[in-house]
Length: 243
Image 1 (cartoon, rainbow, N blue to C red):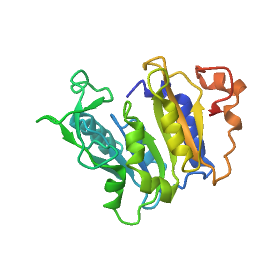
Image 2: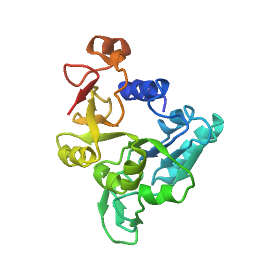
Image 3: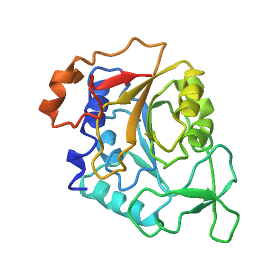
């Protein structure tokens, strides 16, 4: 947790600006799936007003326990915790990769019906259980399951048109499938132009903004300003590069 202010600096600054400019409504709730130790959810919860909540969804009980303790110490009370895995459908059998299940890393999954398998739910299912909830932001970090999670959030995406941010390993994963799915709902896709320390070299964060809204002012993230934020650019160009 102590190292997190120096990792994903540009992503965090962009989300902060989206709230500051009112592009994301502070009264709307946030979904943080693959919430890990709460390094994002705990911060974003403090952006919210009214009945806005952060839904932190994470399969690791240890990670959730750590997150809850941090929330308690910081007197953050608007987080809803879910020890679940999400996919495209309810009831899919998923098994955590044995190499990561005892670590504090984000988990990887494979389809397997065994006694140790976890039964999936969907984001639509989780949110449908709540009343009068609108989603302003979805953060997805699920190690290759991004498209399945998005397909399981179809109702939320259609109804609320939230900002989405998600990871892709651009050398190993077919990003076109994810981009095509979101573009079918009217989204514009941007790569966040920063190297993520501690991650695999091909790991990039992406931002999806719905075309029904005018783009916010991203002048703070022009190429000349990035070095002032201690950001290591992934490629030459501004902070956001559209695909």
